Length: 132
Image (cartoon, rainbow, N blue to C red):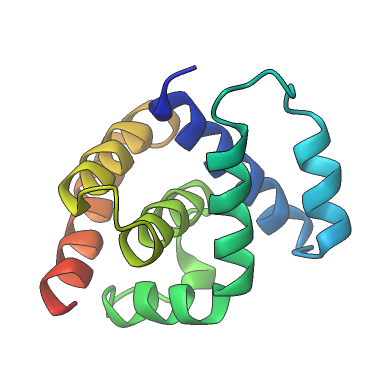
């Protein structure tokens, strides 16, 4: 499995947590059980989900600060999940170039959300990286 697919899975897991409003360790364990142990990207997926849940307040604050016209509760849930994965990478994964995180987030948005979502996400992530 490629890293792109792993990002999509991480986004889907965070999306499920958002929909169920459950970010508990039990929920994480339940969601991760569905991923095959043979998946070579399992460690990356776990790290994204765990880093996000451990730093959710900081990540969400950054997203909201850099999208002045949108509160988190007004954003499309898919877009918010994509942003959460990308911001987690940008802040906590030094081995991943910020431009890669942004480009991948835009591509995932085009696949799972609307065409407008790509530029919305690009703008927010660009602003976060610029201020970093």
